Length: 462
Image 1 (tube, rainbow, N blue to C red):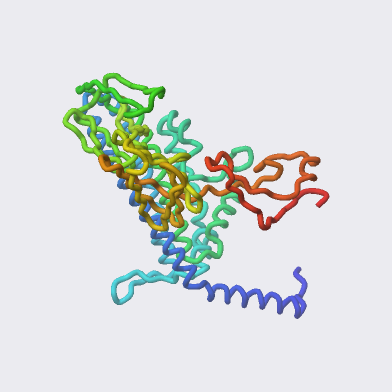
Image 2 (cartoon, helix red, strand yellow):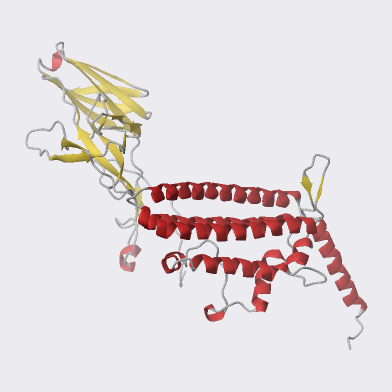
């Protein structure tokens, strides 16, 4: 026998009911729109996966017709079709649930024939998935059973599929204690976590999420079956002798490395080649060609994407170095590095065969100034980033090079010469503060003064 409630308890219960009613009335339009946006994205993603699956099935048909892959295709194609059939059945089951949920929320059509329903209804999903008849439909346990049965049947198509994909399928369903089946109570808790007091539009989004998991699970199984057939081995029918050097111009005493061999090409499957991001031009023999006129020494990154004999693709990047020589009798050289640094006095040497007095020098660029410091010696100052164009002439020869202007590297904050890691307490105590150092910088004497720093200490004793 229940005891009569005190007036205070009655008031608390009444306030709870009022608060629940206010919550139901105040599901903001922003939240509803967010769910609709997510639902639209999920359905778009499912459509993209479906297109991918269709492409793989077209490839299956080609492999069935190819004598070199027919035997394996006949083994794996039916298994891929089984995965497709199971997925379509589960997907359509959830699609029917979405329509039923909309009807539960008062589905109708407006004057334009567009579907409308109570998107913010907090009771529709609860009644449909959690409440048992006659108050509701108790569809939550049916949904869990359908998803679990789908996953079990999908993995049962072939033992190799279960071993390879069992732990990675997107459709992740919880298990009970010790990996056993969920109890009826645990299944209800699973449904409760998704559909209790959930707005209708959110419930539909959750169902779309399950549909997306189904499509991705199907894609993994179908792709695995396709991969097991194996790719058709490419026949290389073009050959060419290849010889490349790591540098096209060196100074006396420096080493040149030459790589030589025979390159094999497939005329029906040419690679893709780019040089520093720019496409190279294919030639009739299957190789590629890239032409350019450098103004100074440097290197180029060559990226080659190609099909390997097993049909898979690979990508390799190689560096091609080159040196640009200067006309005899006139030499322009940066003494310390191949670049100028902003804010520093950058040394530059220019010598001519006819003597220093016959050499005319001009350096142009944004924020560039220079002065002569001695015979054939100059200092270049740069206040802006960009490039400096150095032009030199000795009356017989002209030389023009472009030198990039870069920032001085950021200094490292160090304590006791260390930029990080452990440091002995006795060493740390005698430090005067934090220093700023440029490690391995080509210019000597570039120093930074630390104006301030913040010390943060953690652990016991602070």
